[in-house]
Length: 94
Image (cartoon, rainbow, N blue to C red; front, side, top):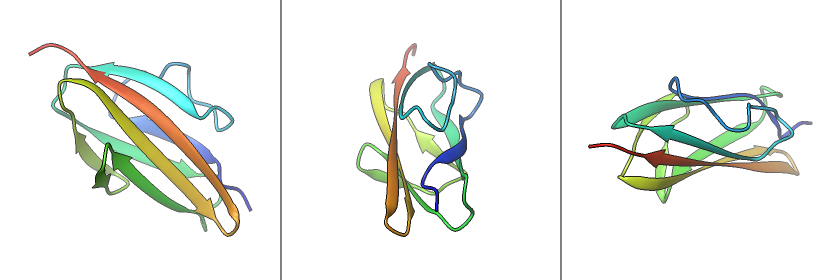
């Protein structure tokens, strides 16, 4: 049973560092109002929940960014195994 992600994308944003299932903290910068968040679990049986701050985001749906720093939390649960990934998305520009 794995609670790791095999993939994580936030639109076309570049995650820093580059995505690895073993790394749980990332940063990204955007000028977009929204980006689609897609989290792919290593194990298809795993359940994924995504929060943008306190707002739930359905996997494969768009998150709306506020100006400044936004914290995205992706929780992966598979039986007793669980893992949490965090992405700090900074919205810049107008």
